[in-house]
Every structure is written in C-alpha cells, then in structure tokens.
Image (cartoon, rainbow, N blue to C red):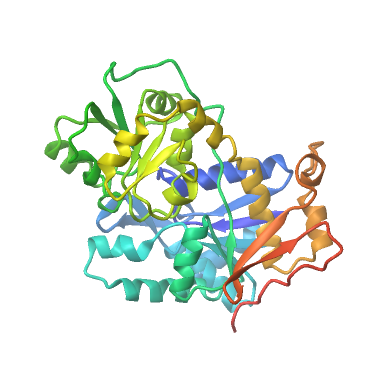
Length: 390
C-alpha cells in the first residue's frame, strides 16, 4: 500500500510537521507499506516572504499531475496548505479522487501575527481548503473543538509519538548547576518567545532553535543563551540538562517538543491553550497557568520520573497505525479489509495480536458534534465515512 503525502514542509526545514512525517514514514515502512512524498524539492522554489528559510514551490498543475502519476499512490493525503498542497488538492478534485488533509498549523493566527489580515478571513480560507477533503486529521480534542466552532466538518483524531530511546533522562548539565529554563523550537514571532525571555527567573534561560526572529532576540536578551538549531544526541543532551521546559506558544496545534521534554524527564510550564492542555493532562508532569512565571516556578517542584512516565504513553507505532486507519476509513474502505491492511508485515505482529483487539478511527462532527467511531474487529458494520461535498 502506498500513501502519497503532499507537503510544503520538508527538508531542509526543521519543524514539527517535518519531524512527524519523517517518523511516520519510518513506522509505515516497518509495516511493509510506503509513504511517498510530493515536496518542494520536486520543483523550482523561491524564498517565502517574511520567512526566507522556507522555500515555496513554483509549480503548475501539469508538473504536479506528472509527479503524482509517476508515484502512482493508492491514497493521497495533503499535509499543508501551500503551493504543493494546493496543487495536489486541484489534482484530486479535477479527477474526483478522494483525499484527506491534516490541520498542522494555525495559519489564521500566524498570518495575523505578521500581516493585517483578519482571523475570520484566514479561517474562511482554511474552510475552503479543507472543505473538499474526505476527512481532516487533527492532533487533539481541543483543536477539533476549536475548528468545529469555526465551521469545520469531518475531523478525525490523529495523535503523535516520541522517540523515548533518544529523548531520555541523562546525567548531564551542559549549562552549569543553576536552574535551567529551556525553550526548543522555531524562533519566530508566532511562538511568543518573548513572553518567556522577559520573565525574571531564578536561573538561566536557554533557547534552542533557529528562525527569522533569532538575531533580534539575541540582541534584545543578551543574558539568555541561544544555542542555534540542534539535532539528535546534541538536542537530547540539551533537553536532559534543563530543569523546566517552557512552552510560551499560544498558537500551536500540538507541540512535539512537549513530548520530547517529558521523555527527557523535564516538567513543562505553559499557558492553558490548545496543545499543552491536551498533553499536560496530569498536574504531576507540568503546570499550566495564564501567569507563565507561576507555571514555571510550580514546574520546578515536579517529579522528573513522573514526566518520563507520562511520555511513555505516546508511541510513533500507534500514531502510524492511527494514521493508516484514518486514511482507509476516510476513503470508505470496509472494516474487514481495513483490518487486513492494518496487520503488520515482515513478521511483525498485527495490532490486534499485541495490543487492543481492535483499532479505531474516530471522526468528530458527524452527529450533532459528537465523536462517531469507526470500529474494527466487531460484528457492527461501523460508521460510514462522510463523503466530501460536491
């Protein structure tokens, strides 16, 4: 089985979307299936205005169609709303091919943070983009509820995982013995990093990552440590050296860095918004407050072992299983055939042999705003996936 992911977020970008699909591809390959990518690297690109680190594809319908036809996927999933995503969307609609989408980024809020564009216009554009999809995948309940309030339909839950072998507690203190308050992620205005950097805290502030606001913040906050982008073991040691992970963003849809911090045994401090309030569900692993300083000081007192245990409940294997089940359900694949396709290959046991006796693709907003589940492995036929509007 081959699933094509059309994405404007791909290498050399470093962000949650890229990391998510990298790990998803690895897990799906381990099943014996294949995740294919239609990305900016397939076309000529230009720098994105206000964010030159991001390259935008300059492509036309014929180029997109030619590439998709060469890849010959069984299913198409559109990850982003940029030129590549728009091209794949047009390809599918023109040929009446069902497709699914993901809502990874709160573009209405991001655009409003940079340009005088009303949120209502941004959400109207998002509804237009996702409205023709068989289903739109969202990472958390709170994002689903928020999108429903903005008129979105056919929302399906798709969670995330974390590499608990790489991100783990380590006996390291890269920044000395004083308390370390860490932020990891893009250094950009929509991440609200200044809400963290302007605080008076009893220790050292560390910012790891790159982005368009990096030079500005380095100059404005010289007492903070800016490491630049880090990866792999270097990044894992930075996490393990922290006492509190600070997540000041108000606009994320999930926050993979939250799981990486928790897996490293680092409690989290954040605002009570979408993403943090879905992940930090146990007060023993993090503190959420409208007063970020209060949240940080509370998080300093929390148990690192509890943070690690919480992260262990997230698995990339389960996330991949859920993604595939969602794709199949949204494309109206019957439950029995879905169960057969979901069985792991290459000698690895199927989901029903090692975990719960059934997998489930959950869809919001189909019956009066309630969550309707499409369940496998039962005598019930399940709930037929709603079809996209003509």
